[in-house]
Image (tube, rainbow, N blue to C red; front, side):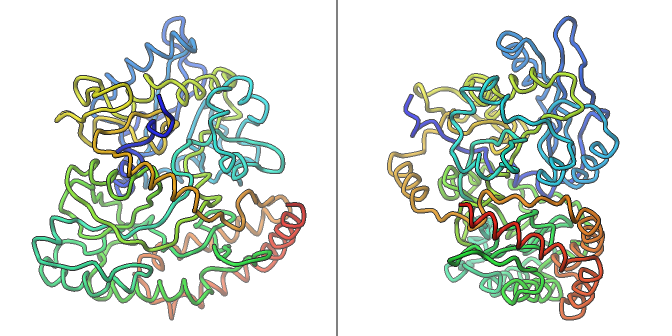
Length: 489
């Protein structure tokens, strides 16, 4: 099977799009480490979103494979998007035992000792999967010279897109050809849609939404530390909430909110805006080369979706850390957990089962590495590729052409690398300030980013609170470490 054909088809970022706004939890609470199913140990894995409606069938078939190959079973604990940060923060703080999880605040929690050091374990216990990782995933996840995560090999670069429901575009004769590169460019078409359907959100967002721009974030976009994604020389750490480009975006979002283009309860809402429903007109999505433009989103929605670029594509630390699996330091089954991750990221039979569903019910093969989706393939009958396993061992859907693959490869070759790819900030000397800054952000981040409050009034309060919390001290330490990082590159 040619590697150029073994790539993600439909489920990658599109499946997260289905669940990003869906914050209700359909989980089995109370994770643990070291359970068993008869004589076979059962490992606990935490992940975001809701369980597929056929979860029992999927995990049953998956566990048949895992029992044979690894000698273990897997139990997935699903946590709703809106509950994820609080749930995982509580687990880390309490020292609750679990085996595997998607990382939450990867750098910070790794430095706290919450995650197992996988530097030597991955090449030894997950050799095939580890060797298939592009270098940028390793570079983007090193903390010092240690690796605490197994990153999912998916879209090596990412780009934020404004995605539209084509059915509603056609229904009202709207034109999105002039949309692109800024939120403001979408104002006209959103306004026209709102005039036709005032009760359907023109821009569907909720409390977890954060405005985008051409930045990379050393601590993630929930913190007020950023660098411009373009430029030469050593980048400067800035506060995006004090940067003209970002502030302009916040002003636009507030104008949209005031005009009724954003839901009135956006700052507190966990309302799901599922891809396959007409409950939204525009949403923001991340796309990468393995999505083949809007192909992934369209297939997942079961109807045509079309997108226009908001930011420029580039390989970022955030993209490298998009879906990091970690092994809890509290796990009693560390080596077994690494072996299971290795199998999940190297066994095509196992991964395609979880990502596409059950063969013959959700899909059928066209040839060795191409599949046809069946009517049984629905959004709630499988897991997403973007946060499940190595996308390069997935089958492609039959509509992926050689030309699309060639365009994908060219886009990867031409993609720009973030100026801070591989830089991970050591927070040891500023832990108190980081905590204080997080508390300040929690008071403002949702209301500002959803446009609920006027940034002209609220940003001065936020900036003053950040200064009092110690922003300048953290920025100085971060810049010092970044300068040293560049000097040693």
